[in-house]
Image 1 (cartoon, protein in one colour):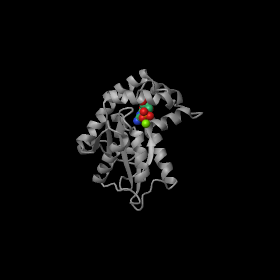
Image 2 (cartoon, protein in one colour; image 1 turned 90 degrees about the horizontal axis):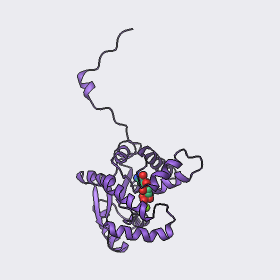
Image 3 (cartoon, protein in one colour; image 1 turned 90 degrees about the vertical axis):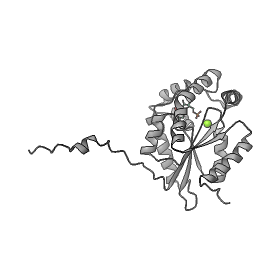
Image 4 (cartoon, rainbow, N blue to C red; image 1 turned 30 degrees about the vertical axis):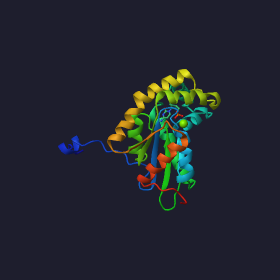
Length: 229
Ligand code: C5P
Ligand code: MG
C-alpha cells in the first residue's frame, strides 16, 4: 500500500478547522443580555420582547427546566451547580440554547418582517468557554446588552425577590456565591466583547422605566427598530 504523503509544513501548522455555526448571523440576530444577579435583565427583556419582536431565551430558565425534567441525565448535576452559584458545564447550556432556537424557528417564531429573526439570550454567556463555543458553533451574536448595577442594589432586589420567587438560589448564601461567580467568571466575558466593540453598557440603578428609555435609544443606534412602528 502506498504510504500517504506527509502533510506539507503549511498544513501542519494551520489551526484546526472551526465548526460552521448552525445559524447564520445574517438571518438569526442574537443579542446576549448580561448583568449581575438582580440587575434587571428579565424585566428589560420583557420590554424588548413586547416592542421589538424578540424571542426570549433565559439560560437559567432552560437549565431549571432541564433540572426538573424527569429522566434528565443532567438534573442532579445542574441542581448542585445552581445551588452553588457556579456555571454549569457549557456543553449542556449551549445545547439547550441551540435546541430552543431551533424549536422557535421550526414554529416560525421570532421572525420580524423580512428582517430575519431576533433572539434575546438572557443570562448568557456567563463564562468565556460558553461564549466562544456558542459563537463558533451555534450563532455569532450581534452585541451584548450589559446592565451595570452596584452589588448593594442587586442584593437588595434579590432578597426582596426571594420572598416570592420560589427560587432555591435567592437566599443570602447563594446570592453571595453568585456575585463572586459574576465578578470572577462572567465579567471577563463582558470585557472580551467590549474590546471587540460589541457591548452596549447601560447603567441599571434607576427605575425600570428610565432604564428602558436608555435601552431603546441604544437599540436604535445598533440598527434595531421597533416592530409595528
Ligand atoms: O440567570 P439565572 O440567575 O437564572 O441563572 C441561575 C443559575 O443558572 C446561575 O447561578 C448558574 O448556576 C446557572 N447558569 C449557568 N450558565 C448560564 C446561566 C445560568 O450555569 N449561562
Ligand atoms: Mg433572570
